[in-house]
Image (cartoon, rainbow, N blue to C red; front, side, top):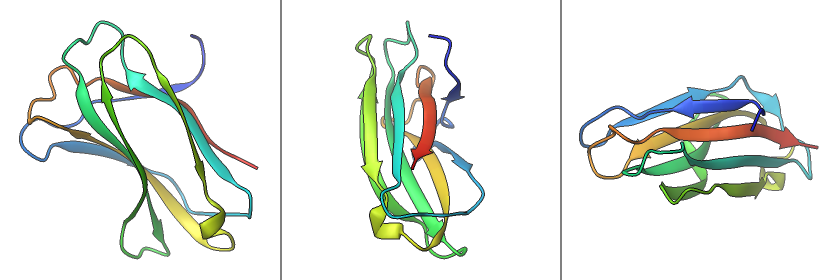
Length: 117
């Protein structure tokens, strides 16, 4: 596909992860986070946990949704209703964690991650 994607590889070892933080935005009622997620092609030992996390005004990090991805040669469409955060300025955080302590094949993509109004 020729769509925009973020490719992530969590750090190796127990508890290894990588995260991307995005500037705060004011969430509106009806906003939805959407993305296509999966393991990159030909990474047969891929096994990772993807998380959509957030922080309000620099506060504690909260989890909105989590998905486990293993290599199966396909991808998944995810959609998360953000209405519970309406009226708040929210910093979204995309996190990927390795599930088995070895991230050598954990090449994860987030294709066209966006907030839809």
